[in-house]
Length: 92
Image (cartoon, rainbow, N blue to C red; front, side, top):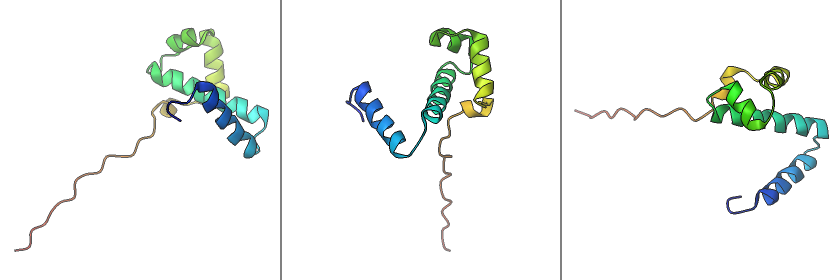
């Protein structure tokens, strides 16, 4: 999707959600959750800073976080665990 306009990316994503049978409520909830998570991650979990940048009151954001079931461990993006190099055994 790189190089594609934001509107084009959003159009494709919305089309995929519709094809999967999501309701408007489900899509709205998932968008809000992902948007809030992205903001909190970008601001190292700082609710006040995230709320200010999103244009909402801190208490509104706190309530949304609670309603959407966002936990502090959700703020850490899952990344593949680094692999340890395999130990090489030399035959004697």
